[in-house]
Length: 251
Image (tube, rainbow, N blue to C red):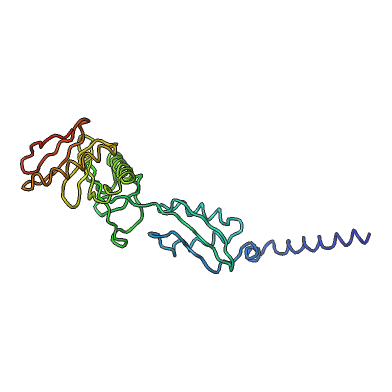
């Protein structure tokens, strides 16, 4: 009997305590949460760390925790991946990987886009982005049409792909424009010369085009080389702005 009472009494007291707290959600909430005294944010270049810290209440709630905060962070347009973990001293560490801009689109203000052609919430003036400008066949104004958006996506993807294969190309291009024929024209900032090509462009053809431009400029110093046409599979045709006539074709 004594053993039964020893077990029953604590259970009854615990039940009474929970019943008493049932209507005091503020007290229950206090016990359901833990406090974060410091937050370390790593990997944020464009995103304001204070914006990330505002999401800490999601982490402090035991019902959410790290996974809930990571999922919430990944919904941000600028965040590609996020990891949250606890450190000693009630510290939360948040490591993020941002989506990287590869180009700017004038709409009419300059807006950064990622390799998928999606807009990123980055102020290009604040971060001094020195990136190529993408020019659809019809300049976008206000809301984009499906066709223009598809052009931006295709140009951003091709620029990113070629930049991965030939980094010097991406660093030297000032703009990429969509032509009525569905081809692309990439213009270089230093010389004003350009490559006209059908995507996807192979690295071999890209190198042939760059070599043709490098060869044509000193050969015709009185004329400005405008385009090295790579649309023909067996040759590169260099055209000059002064005459518009084809130069020597390189096989």
